[in-house]
Length: 196
Image (cartoon, rainbow, N blue to C red; front, side):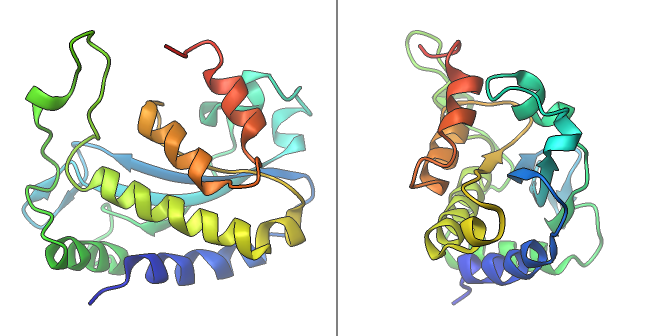
């Protein structure tokens, strides 16, 4: 059986260990599905990339400033772990083997009948395969936090698990990834005005 979590951990950990830039205050675990991303006969598949931002990058912005936390303002220095834009990407092969072994089918499709509740709040989980990958990525981030790798190297900083838009499962994934409150400032800043 394919152990997706172990695979992702073994890919991510050595990359993070090489980061030595001063002032790293947050790590990005970017998980994003896009209709333009294709793999074999599937479209709307997911990418997973990691990066970080520094105090210099954000101009030492206050903790509650959008410039500090909104990924759109970050330096886009990503390293792809799962890349649908690259032919024969090893990460895509591993991910799709894991989908197959776990009976996850109809990758990239989203059931429109289960996207919104009776009050029109989004309750969906994105296209099939996205939430499942997001969950594994969140577990990898949590392992890195609980093992102490992040705090020993950078201090108490968050691993932000995110996409380009935030919704309930993104907040959930980031909170899960940071079990000792590492992401509290991020969550408060990015979600305090969007709570329902």
